[in-house]
Length: 174
Image (cartoon, rainbow, N blue to C red; front, side, top):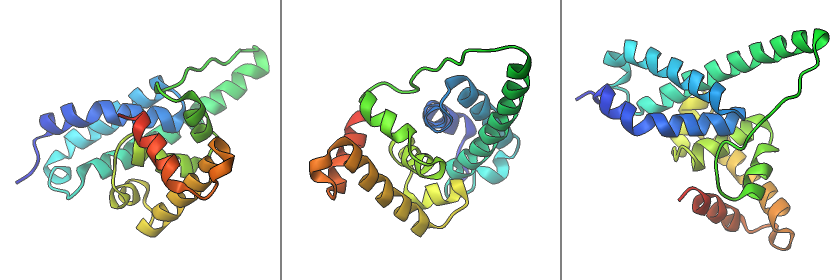
């Protein structure tokens, strides 16, 4: 039986926006991309709602939309700054351990996307693979690398203890 869109939307939309905000670094861009992805999902819900993981499809559409909009904004910003100097502003997209999320923000794009989808959106590795269009093994590898890198940055005395980093991330999202 297909999942009801309204039920899905109410449960998933806030997490979708928060996840995208972590990936793209801005709540406004995240909300716009999430709204567009949900509109597309609703227009195709007869098919999307029957998917094993409709959230994976929506995350993929939202991430693609966010990337497209970010690229456009970058181009617009570059063009504007050639004629008018602007000062960028930003605010952290989630509350919690500022040092942890600052370190996550410094990860390479794909690694940051995987970490945020795993620990903010609480997606499984297969769902992340679906959302990003990559293999599950790639997701596991990226998470392992992120744990190692974050562990080194946040606690140099326990560089190989991936579980500490994972616990920090999970605790921050509780």
